[in-house]
Amino acid sequence: MPANSMRKRTIAVLGSRSVGKSSLIVQFIENHFVESYYPTIEATFSKAVKYNGVEYDCDIVDTAGQDEFSLLNSKHAIGIHGYVLVYSITSRSSFEMVKIVYDKIADFCGKNDIPCVIVGTKTDLSSSRQVPADEGEEFAKQSKAAWVETSAKNNVNVGKVFELCLAEIERRAPGGGQPEKQPKEGGCIVM
Ligand SMILES: Nc1nc2c(ncn2[C@@H]2O[C@H](COP(=O)(O)OP(=O)(O)OP(=O)(O)O)[C@@H](O)[C@H]2O)c(=O)[nH]1
Image (tube, rainbow, N blue to C red; front, side, top):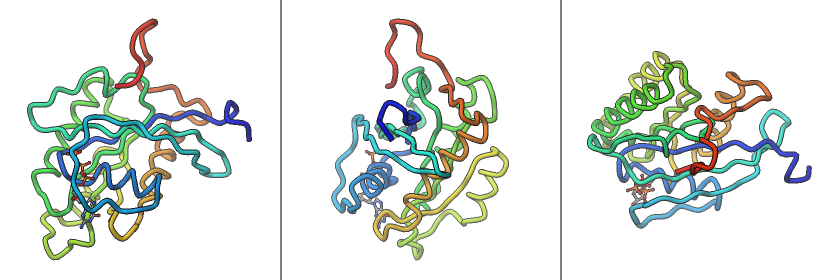
């Protein structure tokens, strides 16, 4: 399929520092695990993803980790079709941060039903687990979001994160796929 006939989807990946956002994306795009930690400033990755028989041209935006003082603003919402909100199963505070970030996105988008996947990372470190799986699942259910646990290290459920995100986007806008907020004319588009 020629590139220009593929459906373009932009997905933002958010969550606390060091929860494994970049590792998840790099495992998905480049099929390897990054052991070392380099804090992200901001980066966008592109990949063609086939989901449900349709090829999507996905831009995946890796953000700098958020904390309680980070302000979510237009750059986290304009031009974005769907969200991947990441916590580490070994960090309760990162799970609490996902809830805060979710509320900020809902606030900014002016609605509670946003195309979103809640992701618990680092399942290979289950002996240090601080967030039970059912708590993650329950929060996602309340938020009408999808939920999955992954390990970028062992390449478990990595592709599923992005498939679920496309499913959440398509469920709300079948075949349409307008971003949650449209860029203003002449304004910046993403991040
Ligand atoms: N054991 C294990 N470690 C992981 C996993 N995913 C990421 N890590 C490690 O966690 C650390 C942080 O990972 P990053 O992917 O850089 O985290 P990040 O969320 O992008 O961090 P910021 O850029 O600061 O927001 C690195 O040392 C990774 O190797 C995983 O699935 N299992």
